[in-house]
Length: 175
Image (cartoon, rainbow, N blue to C red):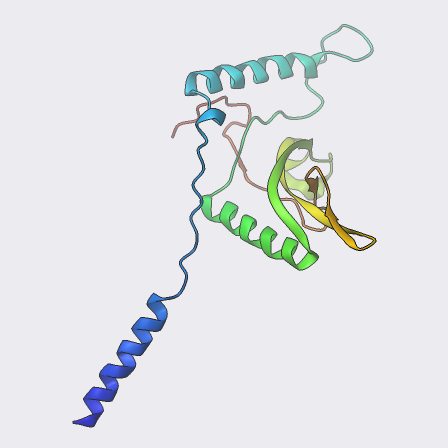
């Protein structure tokens, strides 16, 4: 009769231990002041494509139209939820190991070099994400932090998302 009691006790202890483990904290901020309506997003996206296409086709030396833009235009980049969450988690771990307070991410626009090694992204506009944070700086007996979040070049930026199809498609892109 002792065996079932001990077995039950072990199960009870294991359940108690695992149910007491802290659950991942879900952050919930009021972003209502930072959101825009879909109609405005569509208007902004179309304006970007139209104006950028015009700019890229104007020659810097003359007011003549080139045959084609100097690089392929992209207006969006897509990342899965898992890719973004993994990148955020990895960036947090790396920043912690560097003694940097990770506080956000900056999104950059760039153009891949016109080199074969970049495949289909060769000579194409792209967006990449760079973690930002404040570094603690020792000055005398005081430990100070930078006033503005700076990029953390020790952590590789994330790019290689999927571009919209075709890359010049404007908002909204719906299946």
